[in-house]
Length: 215
Image (cartoon, rainbow, N blue to C red; front, top):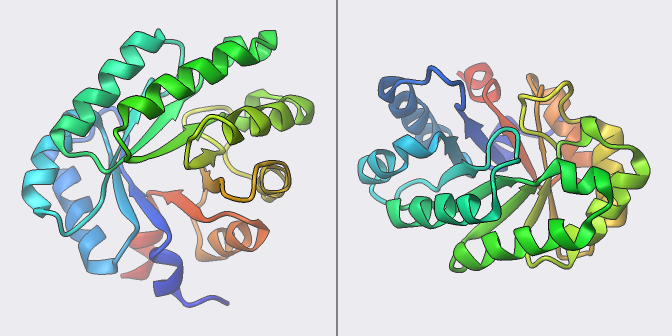
């Protein structure tokens, strides 16, 4: 078994529930610092306040086009610029799944590229919501994200019909370019599950549960 501390260093400690209050977000930031997580992933509304609160001692991640991904590219770009202005270090965006279903890979690519440009050098993770796609479509998405300039491909929002699976992590790892990292998220509630994802090829884990288990 991997060391808990080692696993937590690769975790985006997440709170994205619609009812999340500032007190809850603040607690997640405190836990994030205490346990040395990779980042905290929080609702856009709290990014500025959290950034002021942690004072650079913790990476702040937020979401764009979340959780459905069907807002326009212009809205996603605005959300990204707004988050970066507020102090976000990392952006997790949801692709337009309808375009992907139609096979409009140019459209999917153009949107990711537009969001990446507005990240101004900050890390971009692209959520492809694997539970909604066939293996063939996932492989095509791997190709698109690999040439988009994004930093990570991410399995799931955690709000879809299914979360990360070891099989999907292996599939993504196998078909993305070597420099594109993989984030597994959605339903990862134990250190055993997290380790299985890392061993399958994930570089980052999204979870709201792991820090609570480490206490």
